[in-house]
Amino acid sequence: MDFEIVGEITSMETIASGSGVRERARLRRQYGQGRWRKRKGVARVRLVDGTLRLAEIHWYEAHDIGRRELKLKLPFLDVH
Image (tube, rainbow, N blue to C red; front, side):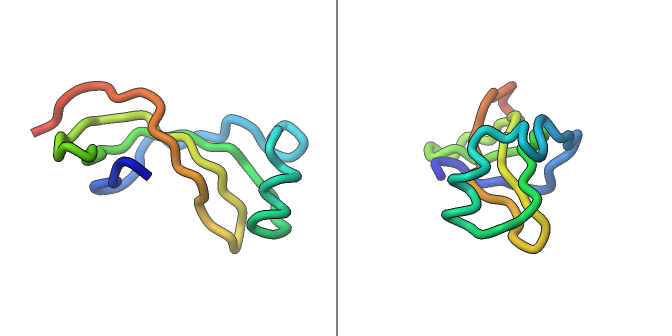
């Protein structure tokens, strides 16, 4: 991961669930059985160069497994 989440993730919503998650078979092989969902939210992140940004984050998550494969999608603006 080339960023660190600082604080909490807000405005969370589910993008896909069940058979709508294209990577479901790979996720089950790699992390185990679970009800996989693809989710997104907004969080303050610290980039590799130390810059703080408000950004949209995407990830996969399943009950009892947790969040996996967080991806930085849209860095919005500098935060001080």
